Image (cartoon, rainbow, N blue to C red; front, side, top):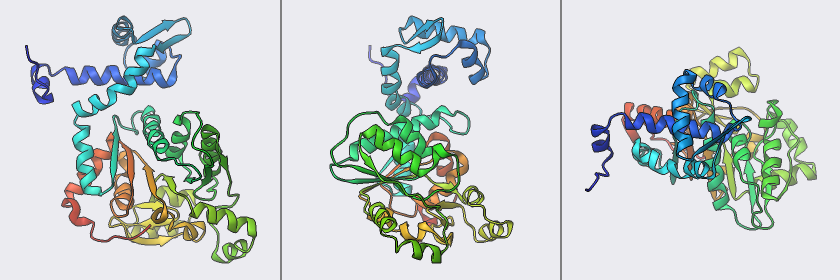
Length: 358
């Protein structure tokens, strides 16, 4: 008997399949990232009763995908393999492959990877984004290159999920920006050092705040060591960075209420390297500092990898990625679907008539 490989036919025949597939995948994925994990904690995470969850756990255990011990639940080798290998089929089944193809055309990047799930509803999705970006990052590595990575939670997830294994010889990892006074674990310096450790590579750090007056920056550039590290950053072959919403980044940079309102009046929706952009990708404001010195970095790098997620960042992602040359975009399903709504709502590509190099 021939079984249709058309997803719509399958759903028509058994409409409960997508829900079951996604639910069990999410259970396996959560255990993968949080094991050992107790059933009560898992039930609380998904906000379902333990009795309901018990049936799913028993099914997965009988299939040899999880093991249960006094310490909690773990994935078996088969379970771990399934979490990694099921994603392409799951994406295709849920229409995410089609979504990637649409965003590829609308945003004009070279590659789009959409991770199943919504970052704003499931924190594990951030780690999935990090794993996807880390996998691509390793593919881009070549001997003797400089890798620059920015700060923020998305780039921290890349460092978390990067396998600890040797890389091509002579790689140097550097931070793509100065400090923003944020949590240490998500600062560019910390992330660069962690990535270098995972790659068994060397690293150089930039011990400067990201926001500096032009006068202060010019003075610092006379210092040989500072000039040397900034030139090294600007020579990066690979750039990995996140994207912030204009208001979020303005707050993190400590701008005044008046400055915040000015950004709103100018239509700022996204920020990268201290540059604030409107929905057309036009630079409408900038914070004096290292961003001015590094703003050409993304044009000179051979590979630019952007990691960003969450529906609230859709406009910011379109502003940065949809209007500037980027090689790879890794995002979650929530952001991807919202971006499609935004672009189709404004007539697709017609709203992106201004190309600005950032």
